[in-house]
Length: 299
Image 1 (cartoon, helix red, strand yellow):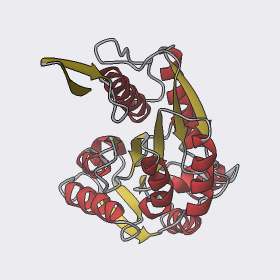
Image 2 (cartoon, one colour):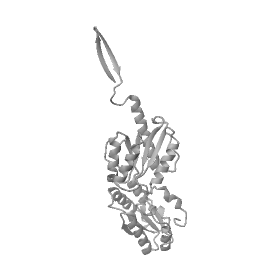
Image 3 (cartoon, rainbow, N blue to C red):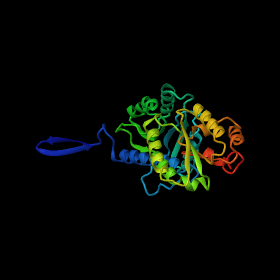
Image 4 (cartoon, rainbow, N blue to C red):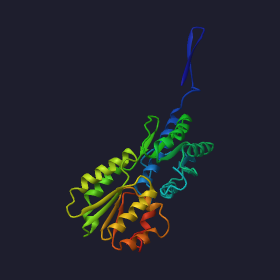
């Protein structure tokens, strides 16, 4: 609000007009509502893609027809179908929001930046960006932030105070919980194998440390061998080698699920030929693995 004082023959009058700069109260409410709605959308995605949309009546909701862009890390990311599906289900229950979905064709910084630039042409009020790798997402996030658009990140944390909200999964806590329940998960099996990606990222290292510290207290199951694999291709090789070498191992633990998510068709059946009775457990929330449970591939 801008107020001008005017003197008319000794009579003072004050005229107040809306300031041409800065947001009005209504625009702040709209911005806050958009930020809250985008945050709830991202939270719904990570807490369970199969759940019903969470009502947002208790929180400020964006005005009718507000556009939110949901951007995946890359098209072939095995997590992208679950993220998109969870977001679509959320938006179905919030008719005031309109969702735009996009994911870059390649897992590179330039590809992600180009995808974000294109979706910004649709003038969204907020962007929900899946950050699989901080450095890869940095240029794309800067593009959003420099446009003064609400940014909510999903996944890895960007160290930028301009990011409105960050939604992530407590992977180290999940790894510790997995280690603490190893005997129960083994269900009578007495030995396990471990494939991990320690050293790939600081998060991967913390996952390994928290898991092993908890698993050491599980006296009902014994670690036979552990192998390090920092990408899906070596991981599939390590898994096959371990199951071939230890054909009677009862449990296979992988602290990164990418090998299972990107495996070729029939790969798990080939593993069953090496070790018929093994059970595998992966540190993952990817719903694409759930449908295989109880099948010949994942009994």
